[in-house]
Length: 131
Length: 241
Ligand code: SF4
Ligand code: FES
Image (cartoon, rainbow over all chains, first blue to last red; front, side, top):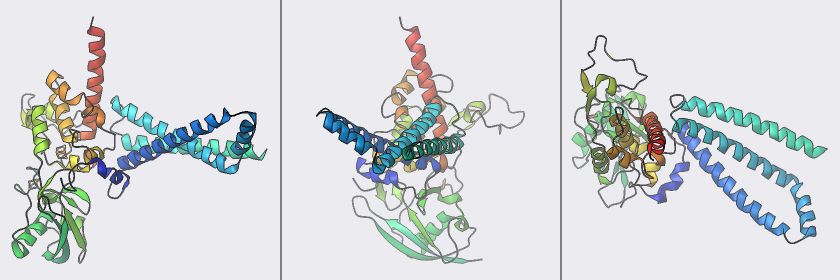
C-alpha cells in the first residue's frame, strides 16, 4: 500500500478545504458540528451524574450553569445543533431526490437561516443574563 | 507567444516514496497541460510515465491533479492554470494505487463498472440528463449515442469517502448504476448499490460533480439512485404479504 491508496488513516484530509467546492465545506461543517455535539453529550452526562450526589452538588451546578463561560459554551452547543440540523435537512431533501440541482444554493440558504436563528438565540440568552 | 513555466511533477514507482521533479518548460499558453507533460518526457526524462491517448477528452486517460485539482489535462489550457514564469504542480489522481509516476491503477473502478453492466451506448433520451435539452432537433428516438461518462476516475479521486475507504464503490460506479437503472432497477444493480458500501455511503460533498469533465453529474445521479432504492423498498414492503 502507498500513500495514494484509500485508507481510513487519511481522514484528517477531510478537513482540508483547499481546492475544494462548497460541498466539502458543508461536509467539514457537518463533521465538526457532529463531533462538538458528541463531546457535549458526554460532558452533559458526566455533569448530570454528579447531580445524583445530593442537594449541594445541585446548587453548585446551578451557580456554574449561570457563569458566562458556560453560557458561551451553551451558545456553541445551540449553534452546533442548529447548523448540524440544517445540514441534515439538506442531506435528507437531496437523498429523496429533492433540490439536488440547487444543492449549493440550498446549503447557503440554510446556513444563512441558521445564522439568523443562532443570532436570535444569542440575543435572547445574553440579554436575559443581564436581568 | 512562448511562456516559460516550472513544471513540478510527482515521481513515484509502486511501493517507493514520492518525490517531486521540476522541469523548465517553454510552451505556448494556448497549449494544454498534457502538452507540457509530454515536453518534459520528450526533452528531459523518458522514464516519466503518464497516460494519454485521444487528446480530445474522449478516452478519459489523462486525468491528473493540476495544482491540487482533478483536471483532464488534454483539454486544460496552460493559461487557465499558470502564468508566465509560474509553477505548475502535476500529481497523479488520488485514491487509486500508484503504478508509476502519474499512472494509477483504476482497475477497481472498471471491475465495479462491470458489476453494474455499464453500457457505453444508450438511446438518446437515456443518454441525456432529464433536465438537459440538447437532444438534436428531429432526432429519432431510436438514435443512440455514447453516454457521457468517459471513465476517467476523476470523481473517485475527488470524493472524500473514496479517500478513506476502498470498499466504497464510488461515484462513477453509482452514476453508471443509476444510468443503467433508468428503465428498471434490476436485482443485480440493487445488490451492488443498496448496501453500506453503495449508495448510502455518499456524504453529499458533491466533489464528484464539481470535477467531472463530462457533465455526468454523479452527485445528482447518486441522489436519484437513492430515490429509486427508497421507492423500491416502499413498493416491496407493501407488495409483500
Ligand atoms: S462520472 Fe465523470 S468524473 Fe466520474 S469517471 Fe465518469 S466522466 Fe469521469
Ligand atoms: S487524452 Fe483522452 S481524454 Fe485526455
